[in-house]
Length: 353
Image (cartoon, rainbow, N blue to C red):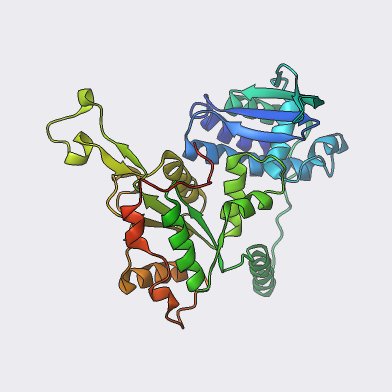
């Protein structure tokens, strides 16, 4: 964007949709952590985060000329956290919470914890853009006329840079799953049989490079490190409409208890489609309650047949994964029929929501 006024307009456009969102900040002896939270609206959250990332990058460029911004931009690596810190320091809308302290296993004092919150994040961000436009305007780049040869050379450099920055391990896979640990283990066994490397939850936690990361931070990092994301749908829960909301023409699954994926699986599936739609694959084991948000998207109905196994392998290959079907172990790796039978008797160490 060419000016803070454009940013102001964009932030103002999401003010209503993010009115129940907030930015939380914690600091002290336990470290510093930012968190965007509030109403569970993936689309609006991602839109605000994307705007914040652009605004943070613009603010970082402004700091080259306006040195008074350096204390803000040098403390954060993530552009959106640069913007959050700018809101904290410059907006005057940061509300400090009550201080607390942490204790060790013996109950002894182990350090202080401080926190604060910013509400009405859309309007606050928009107003901050107006302030920045007056104090630290964005310098527009000069437009120069270049030859066709220079343009081609520039485009080649950009393509090469993009290739380097998107250098993801094409064998890395992240699996979103519920409590059916047999299903999870069977899928991991199959993925390894075709030459892929599923990222385990503990490995994803380490990738976040934080001692106590938020669940969302772990997922975002795992999604960015994986070439493909597989959402494993298993009927771990049972659900139906409440009787007072049932209509005569509702299908049977609305009237009787029907197997349904865990809420965290549905939520994380939304996160995956919101950030990496071209690399997200849905796999279903057994019959589960449908949900309208993915209506029209192809779902792989996985079972023990070689055809369904090959279908999943081909979808992973289409998503850019480097698969190996040269052997025959993948024909039988993972017992998927058993997963459906044992769906209500398996538990996973994945965090419960």
